[in-house]
Image: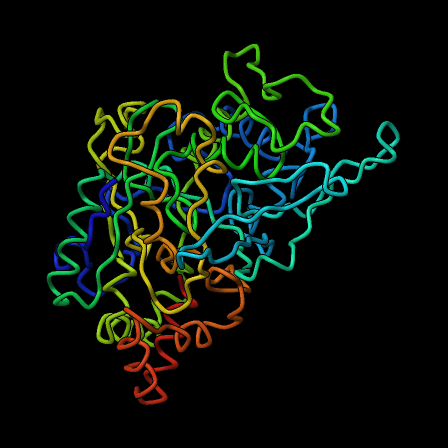
Length: 438
C-alpha cells in the first residue's frame, strides 16, 4: 500500500470572501435540512430509503449478537436523519513487544470465546435472554488493553458529494499541501479496499481513520459492527454464540436491493448541511471568515471542493457518478485527509473488522495489514459543515466548545492554534462567530 503524502491549490478552491454565496451558483451542491433528495432520486424514493435508514432492528432481523445500536438513525440524527449525534463508541487495543499497536483480545462467555481482529468494544448484547439464559456474551475491555478512546458519531449528510470527489484530487491536494508548508503540514491520502469491487482500492474519506472510500462499503461495515447485521459485503458474524438467524441477515428485497443498498442511496441523495444564513451575512462572521484563513485553519479545513464529472467511475469502478452529483461545488471545510494534530487516539485501522475475510481472499493490491500502522496517531480532518449542530467536538467528543477544540490542536496544527491564542479578543470572537455560522 502507498500512503500518499500531502491539498490542491487553495486559490482555486476558496471563494473571494470565504462564505457560501447567499444565492448559490447553479453548480452548487443542494444544501438543506429538509429531508428532501438532492436530485439523485425522487423525494418519494428518498423518503422510502430514509424509512429503511430509521428502521429499528430486532433479534429476528439478525440484530447482534453484539451491537451498539438498533438503527442507523440512533447514531446519525441531528437535526435530521443522516446528521451527527452525541453518541460515541469505545475502541481499545495495546502496544505489542515491537512497539506497534495490536488489536485487543476480548474474552466473552466466561472465556469460552475470544473476540479478535477488532478494536471496537460493543456496548450491548442480545444474551442472556429467554432462549440463552446462561450465555453471557457482553464485551468488556480487559485490563491488558491500555490504549483506549471514544469516538463520536459522524455526520453523513452530503457525503454523496464527498464520495464523488476524484481520488486524484485528494492525492494532489495532499502533495500540494505538503509542498506549500515545506513538509510541516502533510495530510495522508490513504488507499483502502473497496468491498464491492474485490481487489480494487480507492482513497479513503469516510470514518475517523478514512477506512472507507465507498458509502456502500461504509454502510456494510456499520451494519455488521454497529448493529450485528451480516450482509453480502460483511457476511461473517463477530460471534455465533446466541445467533439464530441465517446469514447473511440482510436479504435482498422485492426491489432487488438490500438494506445496505438503501442506506448508501439515502446518504448519496442527502443534501449537504447548510450554513446559518442569518449569521453568515453578519459583519462579525465575515470578519471571522477572513481570520479563519489568516491563521491557517483553511490549510486542512478546505472550504470548497468539486466533484468529478457525471459519468466518471469511482470506487474501483463500482460506482458511476450520476448527473445529480457530477461537477458539483460543495463546502465541507475539510481536506478528508489524515493528519496528526496531537489528538490521535493511538488506534490503528483493524483490518478484519473493516474489511472482513475478503481482505485475505482477494489479496488487495499494494496493501498489507501492517501498512496501516501510520494511521495510529492520525485522524481525518473533521468537516466543519454543520458544526454548529455538534455539542461535543473532536474525534472523542472531549472538547465542548469551538474554543476548546481550537486550542487543543497541536502537531501539524500547532502554529494555527498558537496564532489563534495571540489574536485580539475581537478577532477571536469573530472567528468563533464564523464557526457558529457553519
